[in-house]
Image 1 (cartoon, helix red, strand yellow):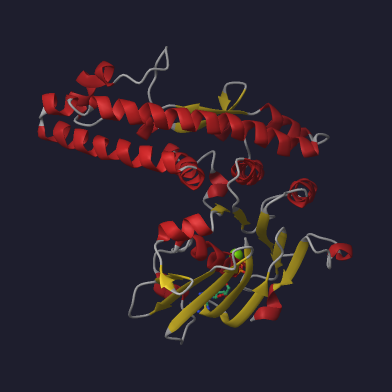
Image 2: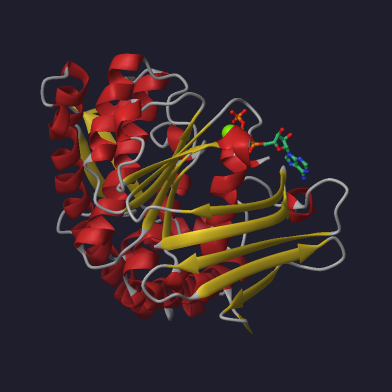
Length: 354
Ligand SMILES: Nc1ncnc2c1ncn2[C@@H]1O[C@H](COP(=O)(O)OP(=O)(O)OP(=O)(O)O)[C@@H](O)[C@H]1O
Ligand SMILES: [Mg+2]
């Protein structure tokens, strides 16, 4: 969890200092008041890269030479610092020693519900697979190992197929199959878990017709290979792979299948409905990690755009009952003033900070 963050010359901020709640942190203010920038600074502390831009120079406040972010974690009191000057790459430190992005991910695991995630259902299978993989990377070192081993063998097999060395390509089948099945097992268990958690969040709004519909939604894993007996067999697609010169089936083609009565939800949901679904899905990802003893923080940017008041109230009800540390933003205040000083919910009026 993050206890405090200090920003210097970061985006619109000169110098700013934020003390956070271990539970809910809410940033509100007009367009351009720095809500996304603050969430971005938190994201950087767990990922060493921005969720918004690959051009990290644009993160430095206009007219300044460098930015600095310093986050203190609660419990361990570890300090993550991120600095970037216009001439150099991003510098990442953990307790004053140079650190890797992987170390940051371990210290500060983050589930981010950003503008891309809002279109989870209509986005590509590759995007959904990335969301799943990234979450499982946070959860399990075994998964990381299996993932890298699988992709290493897959790259080698694909190189052979490209060169026309078909017999050599076959020699990679046993390892790909072994690690592929391990990946698939962890993924299917997680998706089952996630579906149960998703339903538990949706049920908080049992009286809402839309949330009742979400309760009926199917969340399933497509393994990336069709198989009647659930066995990953690369021999079955060997001829196809040779003619297409790549491995056509396997966990690298997996997807999260989202459907209602057998129809893909991407065909059904309106934009606002898809966004509500995606936010609950993101919260379910985080809750599943937390329930599996992997603490994480959750970021949600710009919660209410495209969402009507009634359904926003439903979402806020889920957020208020959420157990982990959560940071979310909106243009206007979504909480009434009576809870302003509640220890669990901390509100930040962003216009004050820059
Ligand atoms: N490198 C920079 N230097 C100075 N200002 C910047 C820099 N990058 C972005 N800004 C400005 O920072 C302000 C805050 O941007 P941010 O995206 O955080 O606002 P926001 O509160 O999320 O707004 P919205 O409600 O429109 O999403 C904007 O006015 C933006 O133009
Ligand atoms: Mg914004």
